[in-house]
Image (cartoon, rainbow, N blue to C red; front, side):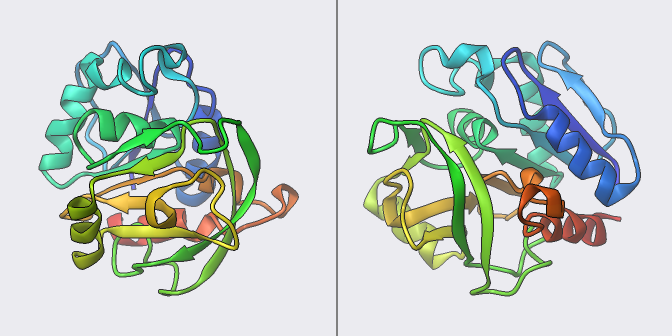
Length: 221
């Protein structure tokens, strides 16, 4: 599986994402700068966490208009897998690749701790390493992770199996219906607030993020 990581000014989890991909694939991902206009031929594009453009305006709003995002959108429409984590999730919603928006946490405070997630749909290339209903321990670190969408959009996500993960045993940010991650309609784009790349090694306190990357390798290799 060949992969690329898109790097923006203010990204801060690109090296964590790189480490996870190297561990899973044995290959170095291409590091693509936000001003680039082309992507290499890859099976997966990962948009990492951080504070792209300093989180000015809304989180991800400026990054969504970077030159590289036009190419990411083109690849996504062609079926290339796209994973956005934390700030990457925010960028995907601002770019229109996923529905809804990420708002300020309901507590108005930055949250940084492990959370418990439930896998809602394991029948996708991102979640094939899990079982539906399985619970995971994955860290979050964000100030704007409160997922919001209109009720009819939330209903459609439910009906079409587009909810990937939910928070259980506590909702850290006030997300509608405790949503922690969603797919697009064709399920080749996933946005999630928790950081699976920071749960791949026992030294990190959890390896529950590793099956996501291993599943991608099996699905895309």
